Amino acid sequence: RLLDAAGIARSLGAQIMGLGAFTKVVGDAGLTVSKRAPLPITTGNSYSASGALWAAHDAVLRLTEGGCDLLIAYHHASQPLQLSPDRYEMLSLGHETLAAFAKADAQGQPMFRLTAGGAPVPLLAYASGAYMGHMVEQIIRQLPAAPALETTYETDMAEGLKAMALEGHGLAFLPASSVRQELKSRRLVAAAPPGVGELTMEVRLYRERPEVARHVKPAAQALWDFLKQPA
Image (cartoon, rainbow, N blue to C red; front, side, top):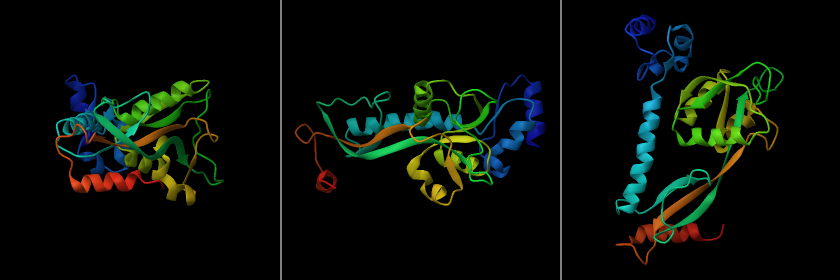
């Protein structure tokens, strides 16, 4: 039925079709439908990515308007949060590494590698506008030579990309902390040599400075003091 719908959509002039809630229904995140449909297929999560961007904007807005006490977010110099250091302070909670991973073959080697030249490698990508998508763009720009990548699937959720990578559908850039168990069991392996195709982000906690804050809740202050202590 989805293929029929895609055909009708194409005949009416549509240039792309989103599966939306049908993504889980059809299984394999819509990859089979994408291959057989007469027009490009998306999960519809590009709209979710747009929503995620608005959510990030709303989270910052809630902090600046006093609607929340603390905000946890990734930080990278190429995509900083627009918060004035005169009014807001932050704690560094740790770091996260974004790197390329792929399913292991029978010999334990990656089915897909992040290399330049050769046949295009299927890329399981973050939706346009997603924060992680910007980070992947940064990684690729820093490589000595541009890798041959062909986007075959996109979503705004890292867990969605991990699920597709585990099925062997392509290479995905994933937070290292999200694939610890898969790496340990060798279900996923690094798709590039150590230090290649990686980017480190800082995990930060933000709050309004107490000296200018309208109100400091005791519980929020206690959590801040706890996290501020040396590890």
